[in-house]
Image (cartoon, rainbow, N blue to C red):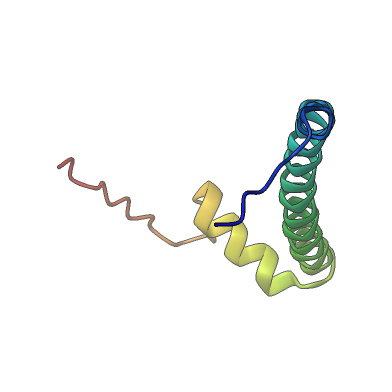
Length: 91
């Protein structure tokens, strides 16, 4: 059989390189995962920003939308209307 002889100096050098670069590689992978998460968060916030911009524009320009929001969120009624408040049952 053929025996593979490896000099101990090569083994020591390989171990030293492994010990030096393993923490660096681990940190790189951690930062890469964080970068991916932050890029997704930026994309989500950009979509949210666009949605809020469009809603603010509608609240500034669209009278019917303003009335709808006022009725739903604040319970505003027109003169002569009777508000009906429905309570949800607790489960």
